[in-house]
Image 1 (tube, helix red, strand yellow):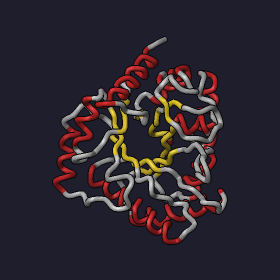
Image 2: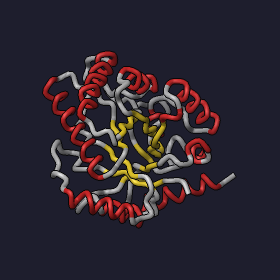
Image 3: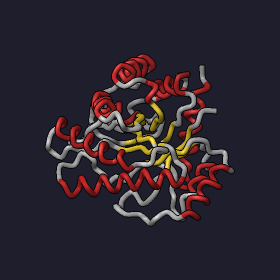
Amino acid sequence: MQPIGAHMSIAGGAHLAISRGEEAGCTAIQVFTKNASRWRGKPLGIDDAEAFRSAWSGSAIGPVIAHDSYLINLAAPEEDKWARSKAAFLDEMRRCALLGIPRLVMHPGAHMGAGEEAGLERLCRAFEDIFRDAPDTVTVLLENTAGQGTYLGNRFEHLAEVMEKVPQGRFGVCLDTCHAFAAGYDLSSAGGYAAVMEEFDRHIGTAHLLAFHLNDSKKGLGCRVDRHEHIGQGAIGEAGFAALMRDERFQRIPKILETPKGKDDAMDRMNLATLRRLAEES
């Protein structure tokens, strides 16, 4: 069975995300390690980490990945925001290490008007600083973006540049289908999917693709607007997701939903059922 699942809440303790994932029918999950809308989170204690690890080891959940705080901007031109973001991201990596989570997804950040070149340079310098002190058990997954506003990461070339310019970093990529489509990569057909993955392989290499965010798009191709829709109900449609789910290269790569959840995660169950059906249909 492919490792597929959804982002799960850690309300009440990180260990509770495991049981929530199981109840929704997940075989992989994504979590925040703290409140994603705050700079500082409650420190993780040894008991917290042991409870999470124990719940995970005794569950049907396979891969677990984490996502960093939405406040972090490692491309920020302002010194105070940049320094605060670096400290917060390093803390996120350390929290992952304590919980035993091996991969941390992050958005490359926004240049805030300084320009793409300056923003990418700032991002690379931030990672140079971070990896001097980062735990060596955690890999950073660069997530592609829709390119809304001044956000970096809407082109595969951006992610490739970071990986090339920070060779001491431990990087992979998390490919978000909605973001890619909104950025102009047409995933709405089997042929389009094949062409997009060929371009990804040319710039980055599919060996570096270590996670997917599976989200349909409320908006059209190249809109550069990040609005997630249920699988098969948006502008991407079922054909592209079917091609991805049947791609033998990625059968063991975790695929995580970030779609609207509904009451008691009912919509997660619906979307997971859709993905499993698409994987099985010939």
